[in-house]
Amino acid sequence: MTAYNRQQYIAEAIESVLASSYKNFELIIVDDGSWDKTVEIAKKYESKDSRVKVFVNEQNLGDYPNRNNAASFALGKYIKYLDSDDLIYAHALHVMVDAMEKFPEAGYGLSSIGDSKCPFPCCISAHESYIEHFGGYGHFDRAPGSSIIKKAAFEKVLGFSGKRMIGDNELWFKLSRYFSLVKLPRDLVWDRVHSGQESKTDYAKEYEKLRQIVLTEALSHPDCPLSQIETEKIKIKIRRQAIKQKLKKWL
Image (cartoon, rainbow, N blue to C red; front, side):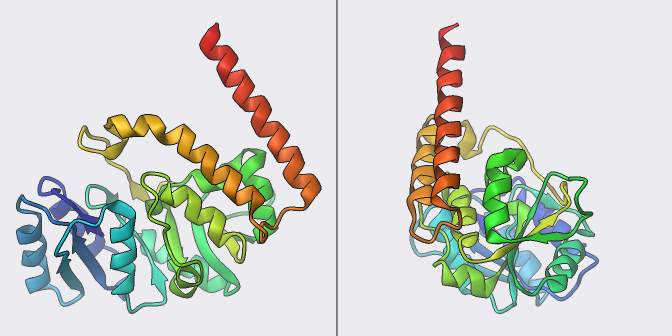
């Protein structure tokens, strides 16, 4: 759990984790230089529960570099992110861990759109995850809270690149170059919406441009699991979608 000026929400976020039916976890909280009471609140929980560990950065790192920093303290097999303004449901950790244990070849899991081919959880190859993503499932459009990641897989791809706002989208592409994906049920985490989120800032207007950069890099990477023919078909599809979006703006 990374935090920055979340005194209004962090207590609820922490309590939701501590209420988990799955008990074998450590809750690592890394504050990124808050000037409000975020750290004070977090440390109260640390003093009461040995599973809670609070760290405070000497300088502000920013969202994704701080997520990497938090992961560096993790001792467990899996990494599970929860934003300090969101809540995790009591059954969520059990669902995620049990699913990953069923598929030891998988590198990570993401909440997914259900389909008629298999019940949750189910595991798909790196190639299948790319095909499904561009085929309408949008696997790689999930936020970090939708995921559980094997720490060894996270370390292999060197974690988040540090790119602002688009880092999660980029990470799923990176992981699926080398690892299978476990498809998990939706709604394991409750995402709070409020005015203090980055998605509400002017920088959010750059998201689509950043997303196109990530797409270009992912499809041109030498380890992309798609064939050249598949890649070209997807590029054509993306260009057509972009043209449609432009036409909508003009009409």
